[in-house]
Length: 454
Ligand code: EPZ
Image (cartoon, rainbow, N blue to C red; front, side, top):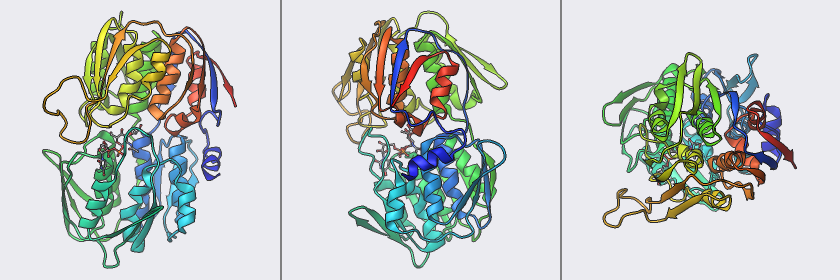
């Protein structure tokens, strides 16, 4: 299957396709891991290469399956993707882009959400696009209404098919005024990748401003785009006629860095994360300090460890610069070891506490409140985005037989098994390779005691 080929083809691919781990927990994780480019930037920068008339070079590309999926999708559309000399470097040549056949795209879409971002670039290049139904982690219903509304505002015709959506824009795309109902990362990227070549100016309001978004803006500016980032989440894009290839080193993966930091706290270890930088992690570092974690900022990365007994906190996930929703799952494993009652409010996704059931099975005291903790007016005036988890610690965790539900939840399951005393069997770990490069070899480097079972 192409996805697997994509993985084997990627140099330094993740820890194989092993689906089950036998873990013997109770040992602190100690040592160094290095994070590469951010999964949630690299995949979008690869799509941006489609917009250029000349080849692009992208550095610090992680060997993860989400990247392999986008690589296959680009190749199906005629983009030549070759490995550069330095590990994790892609050369992307879009000179011969042509439309792929629907069944080919479907076969390559994998469990990814990135295909939706091909709309704008393909409409500019080919005047049409077919996007298969999206995959991605089951952490909510993951609608794409903001994306489709924006594309229609640019002048695209959008047709819903049983297996996906077909788009066309025979008379080209025009700049638009778009006000997002919510600072959606994906919808912001959709607008950026479409507006840069649209005719006229696009004003995007209530935009997402995550570091990965700002890095995508940097990539597009290198290509010739004119994008200005105004106060109060306003982004102005002046469409240009031609864009060219870029050369870019991706911003580091702060989600992976935060995951390993939480692992150091949970296992009472000490982990140096090479490549991690303080500015993009300020909010995380504040929460880490409140939990009783300790960190040391160095030139080439950040050292994470406990600073004593862990303390309970109340955290609410939010858009940047708030506490990222992707950070709460690994942190909750550490909070099971904190002395007292912690509360985590999840306000970005509807169902992102599913992973906690496995932690409870291991002995954690976690209660999920699907409709939040307090009555009265909703804090988040959208769908039922009020879930809260109350974690009471410290509770000893004992090894168990558990199955990984999604990417970040899966990472947390493995860390919980490494924190627990005794043996655990963790199934479906292959999903972790979607976002964590060389996951198994990193665990080994940190002294984890486990076997990969097929
Ligand atoms: C991106 O997802 C990331 N994925 C997610 O990381 C991350 O959690 C999320 O941004 C928030 O930071 C990638 O970049 C590939 P959104 P995205 O659009 O773009 C709702 C990981 O583990 N919404 O900001 O899909 C949506 O349902 C992943 O690396 C609509 O209602 O996130 C959600 O409730 C998980 N309609 C909220 O907005 C839309 O059209 C935030 O979604 C689009 C989104």
